[in-house]
Image 1 (cartoon, rainbow, N blue to C red):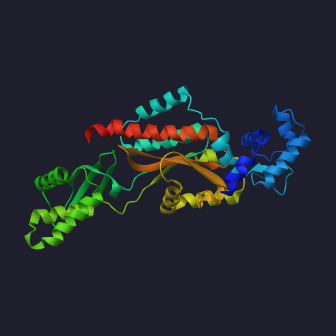
Image 2 (spheres, rainbow, N blue to C red):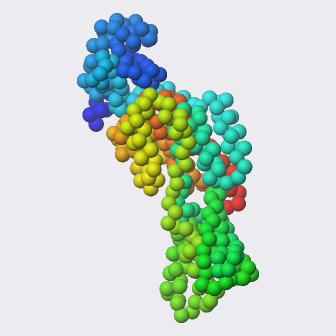
Image 3 (cartoon, rainbow, N blue to C red):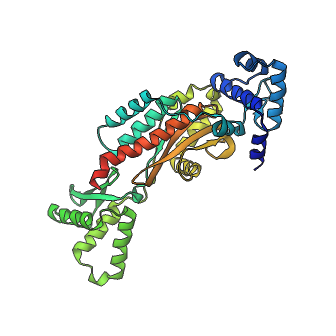
Length: 354
C-alpha cells in the first residue's frame, strides 16, 4: 500500500526522469548520473535539477546509489512502476510473430520438441535465458498405452498423453508375458481409462484390487502390476532451458561467484521447479524482480513468466530469466505471445485426437 501512495505522488517530470534512468541503465549496465540523463534526454532540464529529482526518487525508494559510484540504479519498485504505468502496451512485431509461428510449425514431432523450440526462441529473441517447465507425467491425461515385449521378463511401457508427451519405461514382470496378452492389456487400459490422468488411473486400479482382491483374476492382476510399474508418477516436471552461454556474456556475470550461484540454482531441478511455480500465480504474465523470490534474489535477476496449456488446462510455465535491467517493454509481450503460441501449437498437433 505504501508503494501505491508513493506512485501517485510522482509528477510527470519525476516519471520522465525515472524512465530515462531505467532506459539508460538497461542499455549501459552502468550506474546513471544526472549529467548522463541531461545529455541523453530531451527533457530540457539542467543536470542540477535532474540531480535533485534523482535524490528525491532515491528517498522514495525508486533509485539506489552503489557505494562505488556517483550514479544511481533503479530498484525493483522502479521497474514495477515502469512496467505498470510508464511502459507502452506494446505488441510483438508482426515480423517476429511470423518468425515464431514458422519455427514452431517446423518442429518435426513431440510436445517436448515444441518446448525445446520455445525455450530457444525465448532466449534467442531476448538475449536472456529461456525457460520452459514441462508437466509432471503423472498429471498428464492418457491418450494411449502400449506394452511391448522385450527379452525374457522385460516389457517396454509406452505412455502417450493427449498433449503429446510420451514416456517410455522398461519394467520387469514375475514371469514372461506373450505379445497377445500385452496387446490385450494395452487395449483394456486405453479403452477404459483414456481421458484420465495417469495418477487417477493407477489409484483406481489399486483401489479396485484392494476392494475386490478375492475376485481379481490373473489378467487383471497383471494389468494392475504393469500399470503400477509402468506409469512413472515419481517423474516430476523438468526445466528445459536455453541461453546459458548468452547469459554469461552479461556484465552482471563477470563475477565468478555469481556464475557459481547461477549454476548451483540450475543444478537442483526439483528446487528450481518449486521456485518457478511460486512465481506463477493466476493468469497473465508475472514479473518477479530481485529479492521478491528465492530464485531471483541471489543474483538480483528477474523472471518474466506465464503459463501454457491446452483447452484451458494449465500444463506448465515458461519465461525469461536474466538481469533485472532487462528490456521489459520487449520481454513481457514476447513471453505472453510465446505462451499463447505454445498452447496453440500443442492444441493443433494433439487436440484433434483428444
